[in-house]
Amino acid sequence: MSFKKSLTVAMLPTAFIVVSMISEAFAQPAEICANAEQTNQIRAVFSKDSPPPPHRAAASLGLPEAVVMSGLDTARAHGIAGSHFQAVWKMLESWETAVFVVMKGGHVFETHGPIQAGEPSKRSNFFNLHGHADGMSGHLRPDLVSAIYAVSLPGKDETLRGVLFYDQAGEIAFGVYVPGEGDTPPDSLISSFEATQASIQNLPSICP
Image (cartoon, rainbow, N blue to C red; front, side):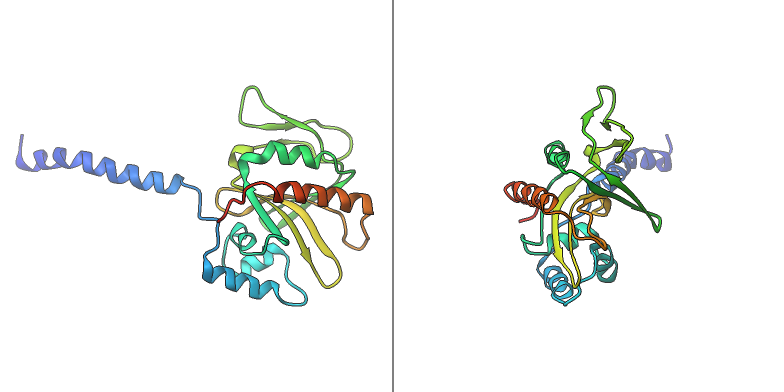
């Protein structure tokens, strides 16, 4: 065996280790907790009389939306690990109605109606919603949810109330909101949200 070939063979294990380390680094979930500097920036944005919605704040700060949520005080946003998905979804099923929102590629999809019950698939990682005439139906992936936030953000004209689900990059996957744009939600629905929010706030925070 030539010296050149021997050197190439000897280097293979190191190359495989380097490639493996790079692959593992890309496979790890993104950092979704704000540091002290980011927290100060985030709270400054939301201290305004008319704070922006979460996705606009994230865009203006150049941060994943989950990081922005983590920088707010607990009264406005409290985040828990995605492993609590099924427990949180069960809470949402008790709401009389909601707006299910998905934002993708600049598009915004909204479905109005009750939150359908669901159950884990016996054959895959999907959480299958029970489809009915009203409300959202589909197949969700709880294993890809990194964080869940109960959010209550007072604005100039109305309060944004919802439960937001974030992917492993810290970006919004979808959200379940109390209807309120242009209309005042009924007290019963606000009470349902507040009960869900309180239950989520009683669970350990995903960020220190």
